[in-house]
Image (cartoon, rainbow, N blue to C red; front, top):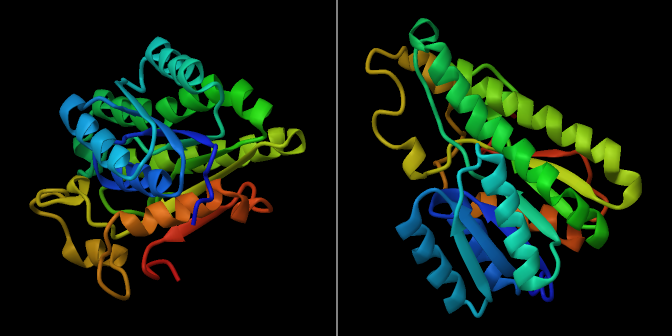
Length: 249
């Protein structure tokens, strides 16, 4: 499929995991890409992987909590490629800990990266996406839909992303821009590696977040993101798609 031929996409969090998988998927389908992440070396590696798929690629480090940095990246994308059709907000951090151990500063950091960063990119990209009648795909989580043990900070941030997604879908749908979200669960990425949950976690509670089948790689989320961003998703707006192996079925 070449659903993104002639289209331009920004992918945040592109240095690894779901971000890298999404960048490669869009590159394979013909998109020109502007890739962002705080991690410079793996971001450059993603860019090379996308170029190997035949894509035209620009990349730049970006702190999504820095509004000026966000706006500079959006401006650089439009200056380089002349337009913007899709924004994929994938940058995020995970914090799982006992509620009583989460300091306000740690809580605030998760909100800043996951929610405020998504807000800032949506706002900076908005005029260009309205011009192209483009789309936004945000990354929420199953933790926004059901209680996630030890996820007070993470779940709260993703619940905000879900609410923001619906708000933008309603506010700008009549102007031709769509906004949707994916809700990953049980995806094998570095963010979900050993030590993710507290050492003394109640594993019976943790098991609530397990899928029916095996965990899957980030490419399954990238496939859902590509569908939502493409013309195949033209009549989908304000929706959240769970990619969780039936965890919340």
